[in-house]
Image 1 (tube, one colour):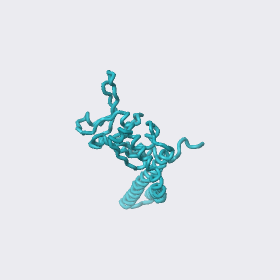
Image 2 (cartoon, rainbow, N blue to C red):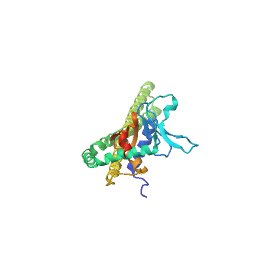
Image 3 (tube, helix red, strand yellow):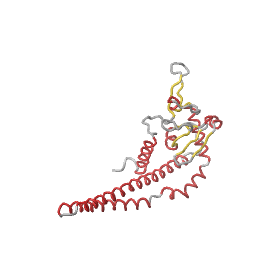
Image 4 (cartoon, rainbow, N blue to C red):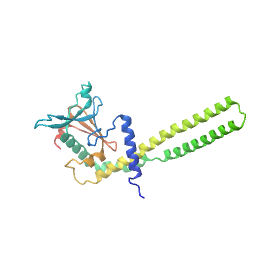
Length: 245
């Protein structure tokens, strides 16, 4: 039967889960902004807060969680509508540069994401590990059936274990690098698809567009924002620009 999701998409999901867990950015919340907005001053994650909850002025805002843990960062809060407007301004600015972005990626996409060298090294390391396992088994069998010098045997066994562990450690590094390149290829591909799917500027916030294009957002002073898009592109938006969006 056909795969439920494409292998490259699966690799992207695995890469994102691993990266966010390592960075402490993992969140199970389903809100589009959760785990995506960071304080540019202290590095804290922005979370949602309800202001004036029992009044007609009830408002949901996003602010740095570290403000309640002793940090005195000066970055300010955002309403959901403000963040949505800022995203539209950043995406539309990128959309206006679509032709230049697409042309640039056509030249460098393969070089950025090619895994040929890693695939070859992975195969070599897997072979090395298989050979080492067989040599270890032979050493154990020889020791069981022959009167070997135990000090020499132990040294041989330890050397084979170290040889295996060294290959295993490098294989883990190679697999991480390969996953990173594969994820980069998928992220660039999805990002370009979103750019090329639109003939006009985007006027309303779209959760799918947000999820498929935004990696994370960094909040600076005076409500300036840096949108880090999934293809690695960074777009800085001043509050005067996104307020006009």
